[in-house]
Length: 500
Image 1 (cartoon, rainbow, N blue to C red):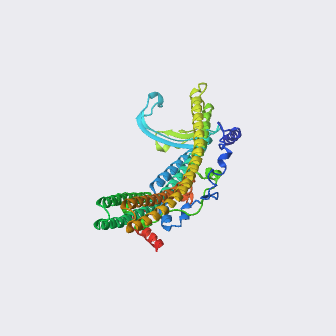
Image 2: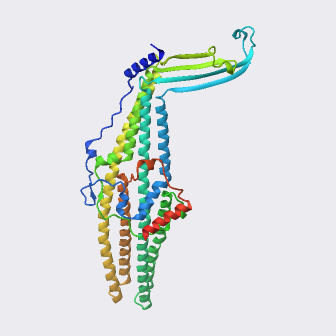
Image 3: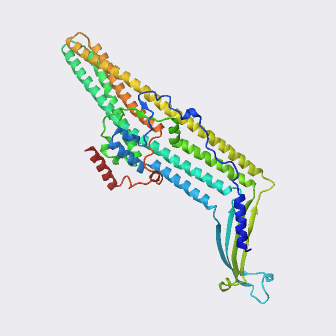
């Protein structure tokens, strides 16, 4: 039987006997109640229908659609996440390469004086020594050290991919929120200016009555003070609107000056007037990228137990080398200087295995920690959704009550103005009615803004927003530099076309 046949027989026997050290990964169990319907789905404000991945299209706003597309293509956090996925994939390729034979070529040439005992009589002791060789080694993965390492690297890739999806979910939600905040600020700004305008008319009327002797200077001063207080709200709201637009520029990969003007033109609240689809707990846990990332980290930690457990057993490698040593290049390939070696190499740390067992205990502790993190992530996901649902539904009720208060305050101020004109009430009654109406008007606008944010928060906790295929996400693909003039003209033109 030839040497080649001996090696093949040995490899076959080892492959049949091989087993992976350490525990096999088993997906963690989740309590059945976590997979059921949410506690707050009985409200008419939500429905148990599945969550749409592109939930932002429910708003039917082409400008928002384009902004989110731009953010997905150019946001810097998404690019960072894509780089981390690329790194994890590179580490996986390195782990898989350990399954293959490793080869090393070496060569060196030295000129020097050799000891007399190493030279034949009559030969010059000073000469060239030229050596070249090829070494090949293959680790027989008898106890699964390499295969468990590949499993761990695959878990790291899965976790990095899930983290990238989590970044996408966050960026989509933040982009929609920035756009909604800018629109809400514009709507609140209109309300604030309307209130100031109404108070200007009341102030003008009070001044005329004062000139006619029906009201005092104190009445005029009180109305003027209320008017100025409400006018002071305008700069604060304008600053909030500017801040939202600056956030929108950053999220879409632009400096503030490059954000097209059409992105700031919406002046009404971004609110859905239809039930929001929320699905159930089972769909949520399958969709949430943070839950997926925690599970993949648990799988990787479990595999690493096998990596260190394999150190308790011998590490077997099959190797060989060929080479030649000569005093000249002409003699390198002759029969005399040619050499070859072939055989197994066994390495085993025995009997002192304390370090290996300590590493196993550390890996097991890491796995227990990863399991606890998974359980905590599941609980946090459910808590976030239930909280978002509760806040949204209570804010809906609050908004309904504020709407009723607004209608009553509006009716009261209209009646009081008429009564003041005919002299049946004094200016103090009008001042009180005007203040109540201004407060109710502003509170209603703030409630609408809160509802807009509540809806986006709910979609974020539901993990909507996976968007285009994964290949586009994880490679960080983008068409051009966001601040490039050509890209800016194209982007602005697209939005302008949508607005026509």
